[in-house]
Image (cartoon, rainbow, N blue to C red; front, side, top):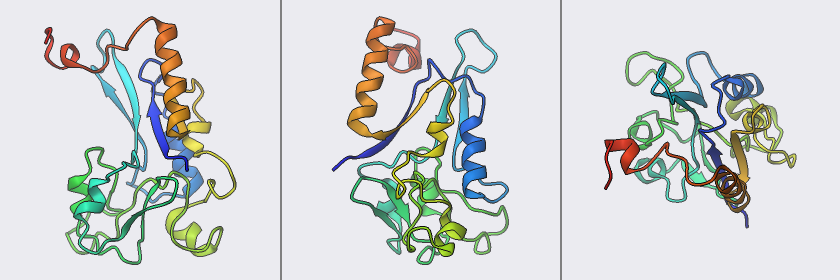
Length: 196
């Protein structure tokens, strides 16, 4: 079975925000919540890079490990989803996630902020596929229709890739080889400015 994954190629992302806009429009995401956002590294400096970030649908998701009511679950194809009917809005998942994917829909006092919201990889939720309940709570279910997440489909430069993790990795591997080596966005030298 395929393991669905996202990958953003920092060498191609032009910070256009099309992925963010596509997600918000497709799923009618509440004001103040961004299931996907674009992060800019070294903003305004030579060599600036942008990366589109959302839930990365981790193989061993830390949000699921800390949830006291076990509202997170992983589908057969590796998509990490959560059940808003079980969620108590404690926020543990928000603090555990290294990508800041789970978010409160309202910025008010603790206990009245509501249930957490996060990227669903356009796979809906535990409700019946294409039902009004699924649309209202989780957004559209493009995976059920055999489509990829809209954020990746709307990416003009194809910087944001989504789909089977092996296929995505092969596409990125070919890009890196074509560029003549490994991108210098990550690694010891990029982080610390010196050789290991």
